[in-house]
Image (cartoon, rainbow, N blue to C red; front, top):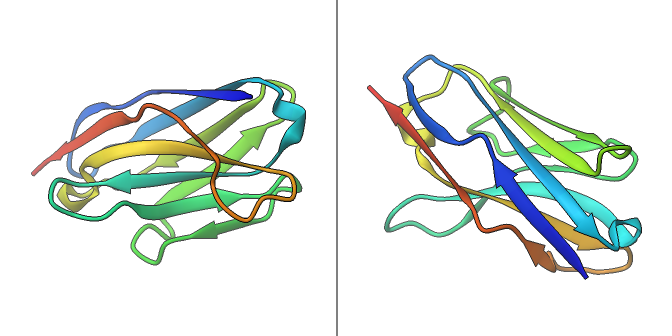
Amino acid sequence: QVQLVESGGGLVQAGGSLRLSCAASGSFLTINDMGWYRQAPGKQREVVATITSGGSTNYADSVKGRFTISRDNAKNTVYLQMNSLKPEDSAVYYCAAKPTGATTWTYWGQGTQVTVSS
């Protein structure tokens, strides 16, 4: 079993930056991919960025060039550096993890609120 705990959310002005962290505990040796999703009020949850155990990354078009996902396997932590934030980035951000061999995101964090004011 894996537990994911996010931190780093908050209120920031447009154009500002935030760094989200997600610490994994438990049987993390079974984790392959990790990712960040977000959900704004009235909208579906959407993928923001993903990273494999080997460091390959993918980003949603809306955040390319502004957000950077990274992971520190020694600390069992994945990060999301968010720069040039826009009001439309406001959402609850969730960390997710996919066990080796899984085809779906199995483990989820509790979410952290990001609010960008205009």
